[in-house]
Length: 231
Image 1 (tube, rainbow, N blue to C red):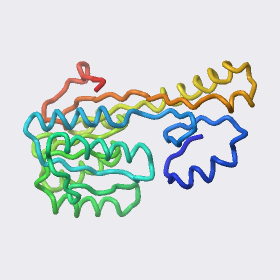
Image 2: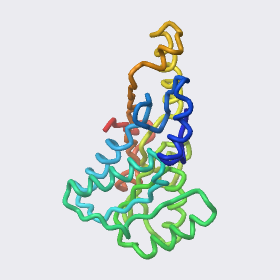
Image 3: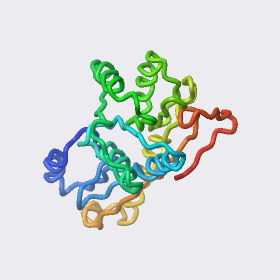
């Protein structure tokens, strides 16, 4: 079962009538169900640590739909890391992004009102690249005037100008791991579906990796030497 834009109540409404069917949740988590999720927090938290350690204080975030586990955990990582460094959370430094046609204008208005931001964590690479266009229109030098961090490591990210720093979270590996775990659990009970339903729930957390590129600090990173740090 894959949950994306689904609330906790909607998830339970869907799952509870299926108690007789073995269930493995991907990219969502509900009590009593086995799940596989990305480590959404560690890489973002450590990237923000790097910014703060270099003297950056005004850090904003474009976050996703908070009904979604990935978006919620990424936003929590942002808030928790600021708190760890005794930097007050300022709601006006954050805005919810989405993939609607009106998102660009909303982000443009938001950034124009908060152009003092030194760095911005963005919910996804796609939205980060949209932000690139907005900042360039205003003459902002990405990586120096304002630092940007995306999430997903889509193909376009390393070819952006400047290349987009991001958190790599491989959907291919995620899917493979899901199939492997389903097969492993089935084999552990010799294919007995009733016994499979009685197995205790497990949680597998898939690591993510920080990809250091120029948008992070203005320092060019040759593609051949591009660093991938598990944070």
